[in-house]
Image (tube, rainbow, N blue to C red):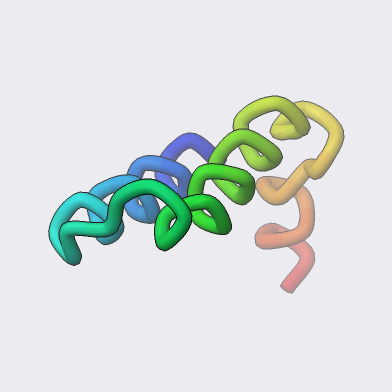
Amino acid sequence: MHQTATALEAAARAAGLRGAKREGIDEAVNYLTSKAEHLRCDTALERG
């Protein structure tokens, strides 16, 4: 999750997004980082 959140933040920064244009990305990053232990993406990736 951390890698995905970092990539989203980097993409937003590279695109120069600020304020309202960045809200969706910020919400996604916050969701991913706060729910990472519950999302279990590592398990999902292992299982295909």
